[in-house]
Image (cartoon, rainbow, N blue to C red; front, side, top):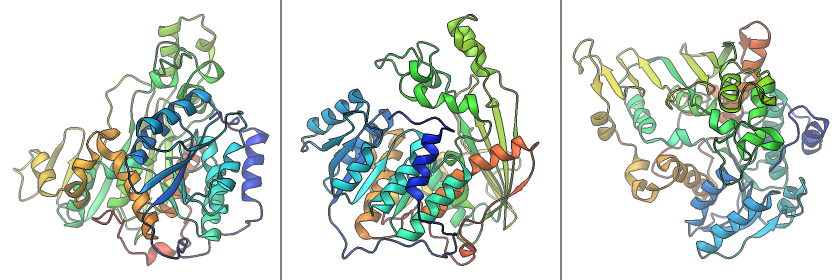
Length: 462
């Protein structure tokens, strides 16, 4: 779906209209859950946004017998048609559709009329907060793609809506379900690393061919240097963030697992944050190399630093380092590092060192440890996850949302996780803009982190 401008009056009007009447502070200590009359065996789900990411998640929904894909909404006819074709190919009834008339408010009609138990939001980032707020106000449970909001106020608005309505909300952060990430969670819980001291992660992914293309729907990645209205898919909306913003724009892939390991919001919390940004060269160099120095986009000044480094301090004394690196040539890596008083794991070299087990000053291969500490989720569902997007992770994140909603159970990645992980973005922008200033991190839980238990319901139930 085509988003409003990042700072347009239209976008702010959408947010304000969706959040009207809330005016709440996050004073409640508990995340309320919508109380079902009983557990449900089958769900009616809808989807807002049927682009390339939405189609990956739609595939997982269509594979499930406990889900009826009842409604789809998109204002891009080509993508809506592809989603309908997927439902037909899967032998499922044709979902009701909204958005064929290109009305950017069509999603509101779907939420009001489709009789949904839940909705998957897979739209450009600017839409996530207003759509999630609208869904929760309509008492439709939300599974939202990562990035909960743009501004810090967005995050408070999403949180306050959830606290007021009690409607379930889950951030669909799939990396929390990565096979090695969950095995390391088992190792952390078993005390293999001792007391945690330092964690690292990030989003280190060459996105130049994602942020630019020719505008041809058949070639969504690369093949040109267009973006904005002349681009297609993510180039149509995502690149503008690199033009206008400078900060950690995509934190949840890195911070999600680190927050699990450190029990954030479950006996621990973020207390401070600061961020640094390098100069910006990569995107302009790419445009000039691919499109020529005379191409109009070769004159665009990109605000996003090529490498953004964000540091967080935690209540229990751990530090966390995140790196956002998407504008330069590099292999993909999330750069995880888990380090404690007894050893460490790093995903870049897939190696581990445990004092008393490993030879002094030498790495060991991680695979035997992963096999030994395989998480119950992967033991139970590896076959079902085979062939799912992102190495199976997309199966697990959809499975978690569906199973929790059916059971009326707390979402494994809940509203507090969602807003804190995502709020790293506007806070990092503020830090950089203020000369790399260290800021206090908001306590979105209003003190509830002290008594919440470190469960992260990543267990055999989900």
